[in-house]
Length: 144
Image (cartoon, rainbow, N blue to C red; front, side, top):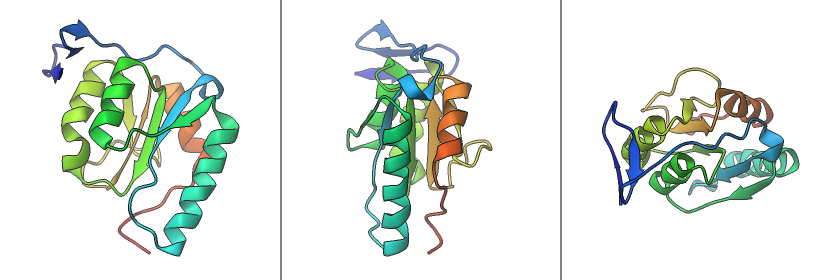
């Protein structure tokens, strides 16, 4: 069971969580989910992102749920995560768990995370997050 409270850290079954200390995207396991939107404009961008991630990182994983992705980041099992097409209820509890474990959180375009922006990017460090942001194609899921 994952737990967290603002200012008090994050835990899994009582074990304190900490983000990974990996410093480069090339050594990072990247978490990526393709989402549910299958329009041609989205699929093209999604596949381009998969290619860019695979060729610039250690590997790619997907666990199937945004909250789980946040927890994997908090445990240090993933070094970066980006996803488009989310709603705040998909990840907001996991966001606290990740942040309290030391994960860097931002919008994929480099700005602050917008809970209503339908997208998120995390890195075990700011450097890893910004390296990932630099190689992916950003898109607004609200616009075709």
